[in-house]
Amino acid sequence: MNLLVTGGAGYIGSHTCLELLKQNHNITVVDNLSNSSEESLRRVQQITGKKLSFYKVDLLDRDALNNVLQSQSKKIDAVIHFAGFKAVGESVQRPLWYYQNNVQSTLNLCEVMDANGVRNIIFSSSCTVYGNPDVVPVHEDLPLSGTNPYGRSKVMVEQVLNDIYQADNRWNIGLLRYFNPIGAHESGQIGEDPLGIPNNLLPYISQVAIGKLKQLTVFGGDYSTADGSCVRDYIHVVDLAVGHVKALEKLEENPGVVAYNLGTGQGYSVLEVIAAFEKVTGEKVPHIISGRRSGDAAECYGNPEKAKMELSWQAERSIEDMCRDTWRWQKANPNGYC
Image (cartoon, rainbow, N blue to C red):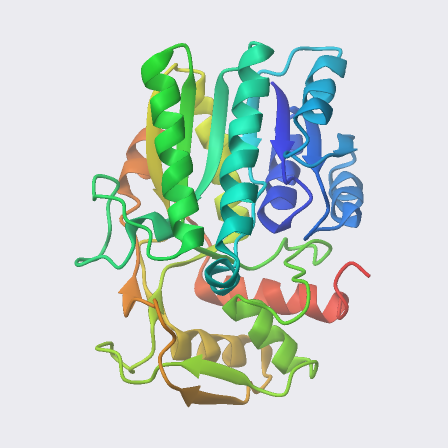
């Protein structure tokens, strides 16, 4: 297939591009590089021995995006939409920025797609669309209710895409609700490269272990979980990337709108992740436990059975694999892609 991948230079996008190239798809990436590096795409091509096309384009620039689609020698068959801001705390501080970047950019993308006769899209959604769930594991039929601007931007985009389909059932839309992606490609050449202080757990842990950061702060030690720390469903980024390949295959069946949880179905606490990292790396991770962080649920993990049944997909890599691959990437790239 001829694919347009928005945000393809980012963490999940680059790993997905790698898996797509392995399956011989033709890829065009658009990314504004605001939180990513073109070096990731160079390495993806080096690992696979295959080429992709890259355009530095911001989705808020509708005309530039339209020019990319019209410049393709072969019509784009489908879009995988990763581009967007993703930090919960930052979204609370800068809500308008998040709604503009995550929602308005998607409106632009869909308008340009429609104008060019492209009506297949996979959207990078999130388990944050479930808010603070009353029950776990969460499944796809639960009501959606983001608890912060980031989560609400994902809910809004899902609603927009559903409305587009209701108005024009020629569209095929896959909504992939990720849980917590961690890990890196086994080569150690591509991985998560956050700007500044990491917002996510594993990059923070690995930067503490390598000495870039002094210690990890665990937010909350008094939750109603086995050890008092928050429980989340961590999924290896390569498993997640493979899920996108499977979702593309599903779109070829013209399913309309379909939503899938992509997770392991297994919850791990923050302290359990620290222990797993220390076990497989032999490195100590100094940490302290502080008060709870506003908006955090005690536990959130998903039921991935629908993806297993309908996509023939399931996560294969363990928490130890996730930690080991994260550390391999961190050691090989102490300063990220710099």
